Image (cartoon, rainbow, N blue to C red; front, side):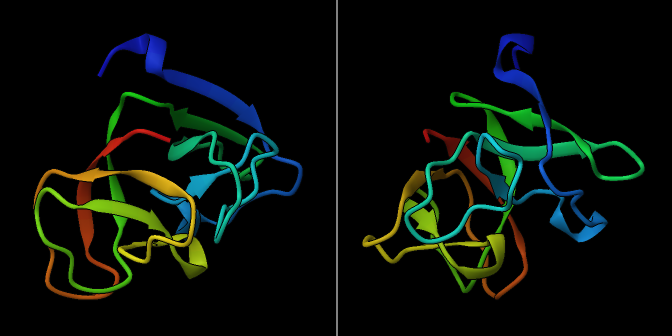
Length: 111
C-alpha cells in the first residue's frame, strides 16, 4: 500500500477497538447506508480519537455482513460492515471470498 493512500483523521467521537476495519466518514464516524466514505480504519490511537485510515486506492480488510464472492462490488451495510446490497454507498471490489457474517475480506477500496 502506498503511503499516499494513508491519511489521519481526528474522530469527532472516540471509536471502540471493535471499529477496526470499518469504513468511516471524514468526521471519523463509522459509515453506514448512504454515508460518504473517507476510508477504512487501519489503526487507531489507544483512546480511539485519532484514526489511521486507508483511503481510495488501498487494498484493505473489511468486515463482511454475509457470505460474499470474489470479484464482486460491495457496498456499505449496517454496523460498519459491507455487503452486496447496491442501494447503499459503493465501497469497492472483493479480492477474495468469505462464507459468513463478520469474516474479514480483502477489498480494493474505491470509495
